[in-house]
Image 1 (tube, rainbow, N blue to C red):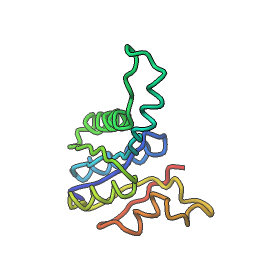
Image 2: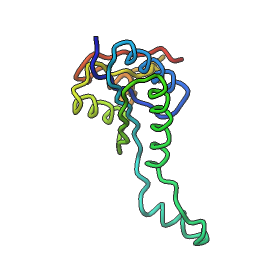
Image 3: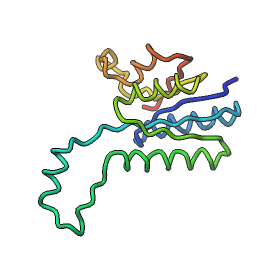
Image 4: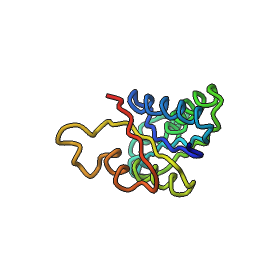
Amino acid sequence: MFDRIVVGTDGSETATEAVRTAIELAKLSKAKLEIVSAYEPVPQSQLRQEGSGISGDVSHVVNPREEVSFVLERAAAAAKKANVDVVTHPREGDPADAILDVAEENDADLVLVGNKGMTGARRFLLGSVPNKISHHAPCDVWIVRTT
């Protein structure tokens, strides 16, 4: 049915539901699961400003990539527990673009996203991740009802 499935997550409850569905579908199809999470880099000026008042022994910074890595590790652990072959993709930039890029780069058969952001007048906003993916994906799209 499917050989390669791409799903995006930001760690939210609705995204976690989409990941659960993707894991089940990948398990049924014996597909490889590609899990994507995107982050925006913190500008250097902000890092300098926020770090100036912190003492040296605690001046480490939790950057957005570390948070995304944690989200991806949690999602990958659930996939591995279900015996699904999984690869994670932390990406800098827009979430929809990150998911679309991974789908294209990995010749995905299916992109799976949650429906969050597709209700009411908001569904017409260009920035809606599910809306953008549904219009630009290089393969089939499955929109999971998560709300």
